[in-house]
Length: 335
Image (cartoon, rainbow, N blue to C red):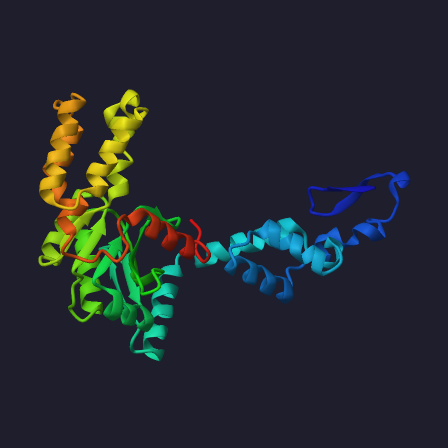
């Protein structure tokens, strides 16, 4: 061990020397940990990039590399080096990823004219709205676009943008995507932009029926952009609130549940529904239940008996279809 001291004239003198500390700087088993021997090689970078595309984190990717290369000492860098590299990459792209996305979409559009892409910037030139639909999505819409499910419950990235897929059902009763978008919030203007852009992408052909949750902004936008489209509310979003609104005693009453389910799901005509509904309200003393009164006021928007003239394509609720869609996109996107 040796120590130096700087003199006022800028020169150095040996201030301390301990001979007992003389030894090798590193043992052979630890030379790979020395900074001079560590580097995130092109091979490691390529593997990290491939793992990130497959939604695999840096720690898991490093373990895979360790197995693949016969031990972490053969990787050429530590896990912390790999994590730092990943951090630096994200930092380098943090101010340019919006332009990268736009460029990628424009390249797809240039290579395939059937690919539709549109976007909107705010007054600070930041990307706020994005919509895209490829040729397959547009073809599917021309075949199966009579009924669509639109969902805005999935926030999928660090900018907290709202992910809004347009989903339908094909002749195999499988989910198909008609298009998708990112919007900054759930306000009327954002929904109007999405619906207007979707309509333009689909050649001006509006769906016959659109199924959504009870969002008031969404309802107003649909009325404005799709004036001739029937709007139906998702049964699941409504009935999911039933236990909270009627109380535990009724929810645990099998007779009440059976009668209520038969009323909302099994009524085949408006008259049959109204007779059953009035009977339930009277029988169980629910006349003063404001939530049920509110749902009755809008019953023509969600009760099946009022949609018997339309084929719903198996989409009775948006939740299962949208969850299926979100699960699909989750393979490629994280928060």
